[in-house]
Image 1: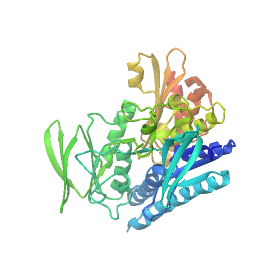
Image 2 (image 1 turned 90 degrees about the vertical axis):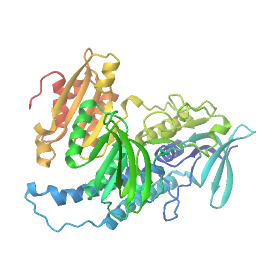
Image 3 (image 1 turned 30 degrees about the vertical axis):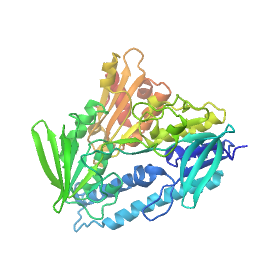
Image 4 (image 1 turned 180 degrees about the vertical axis):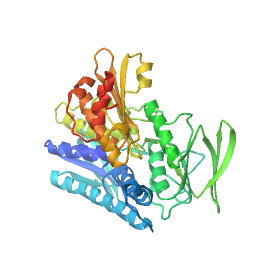
Length: 474
């Protein structure tokens, strides 16, 4: 008999959730993870909890408080002077939150009887029908056998030859969360989700931030109207966003990092105190043994799976960033649940069509479903309704009246096809749209639901009314 029913390789949001759910279903589960913190401690949680979602949101929140106290309270009649930034305390708070949550996963493993195999896992074939996983840790190698193996190895920052990471002057997202002082000037290569969030943090704390985006358009994944509004607001805040700017070379010197880039006006060179490379992420499967045992990959380096996470090999599954689809922690977690339930003989399911996207800038940006660009390209006849937060009483009271909610519905059936938000607490508001779309709701369904007053959610209600051209407060 195999040592475990399920061994998960990777302890990020997809992996640790898969292991917990498998254990809840009565399976003997183990999770292999060898992430080491800067202090030398082993930690669960992967990129998301250690150097991604959680620490970045902690710093976004702290930096937003600093900016509000410094510049945003006078309209409320609150006069503040002598504001100072204690960056060391800010970073300590961030690290404390990370430590609490990663430690919490260890507690959940203990509660659910998941064994944490400390080290890095490599899948190998076994002659007796089971799979073998070699775990390389500080105490040497250990071999365990498993009936099922789940590959949840995650992703890593995409490197670019023109800007090699040195961990000091040129950093990736992890390095950008740990500057020991506020750079006077900060360059960011990439104006996507990561670049915008990290750029926003340091701009609020006092940096002059320039984002160099190779694409000619801004936020290509987002709804065009949302992207245009976001560009306008970010520029007004002081972010210098340069589109169509392809970085060709960097040079670290005493004055900082000299960055050479080309755009429609020719070649330019500018120097920054620090440079962040944020040009996306790529699947991280090196060392997992997946290729060696014959797991199928696509042309972009992602593990090929079916709709329920099965690879081409029997009893080998894959979830999260190492598989196709959006590189989002919540997508990985739901796939982890799905795979665990399928292994246990249940009917696990993860609907990729209703996975929400969120950018935690100010204003926040969130969407689910299709954009107008996608609907037009597909030839789908639709109706659109929008409502501005400027006409929402709660948004006015909060002092955050910018942005809007847009709903897209099928012209024939009225079924919701997409919802796009830019404005206050968009990350929370989008969940109403996710639930509605998951249950096949029409815009009329949301228009008929009573929303509390005064709330930001009333803007969802009004946008639904707008699809039929009958807003009440505009």
